[in-house]
Structures are given as structure tokens and as C-alpha cells.
Length: 125
Image (tube, rainbow, N blue to C red; front, side, top):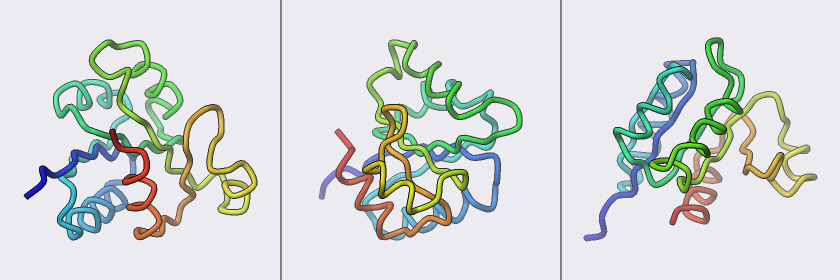
């Protein structure tokens, strides 16, 4: 029995984070925690110690890029891989850029769960 990988999903849409959590937990491979406030994301990451963070870019209180920057500056979270989830970038653009923008991996919304699990598996330490 391998230990479940810990995934932190940060997105201001509570319905979206719940959907992702339920779908990832159904695989039996992940323990998932969600956070719906960008301003609380760093504290959530420090407390939960995830193996990977799925992070929305557009959030009302603190942009995903700012959350990622905070994580990079903090010794407790700087080595946690971050994958951005965004509706801002379309699937075609993700493919054109090889799934990387600004040094971070991107997954376009709406999210394909099978694809998301593959991306998580490839990028988890």
C-alpha cells in the first residue's frame, strides 16, 4: 500500500475545488485539501505540506501568480511543484507552449480529470 500523494487545490470557485477533490480522491491515489482564498493559500500549503499544488490564476483577493511567488520565497514551500489551472489560457495555447508558461505548468479549464491525473503523476516528487 503506497502512501497517498497530497494535493492542494487552490481556486476561488468552491464548486470547482470540490469537483476536483472528489474526482482525484476517487482514483484512490490522492489525499486532497482545498482552499478557496488566495490570501490563505500559503498558510494552507505550509500546514498541509502537499506534494503538489493545483493553483487557479484569477482569484479576487490574491492572484495565483502572487501565491506562486510567495511559495517560491518561503523555505517550507519553495520546492513544492505548482501547476496552474486556468480558463484564461485555452487548450490549444497550452499545447502550443508545451504546457508551460512563465516556467510553470498549465492545465486549461475545463479540466479533463484523466489528463490532470497524468500531469500530476508526471510532476509529483
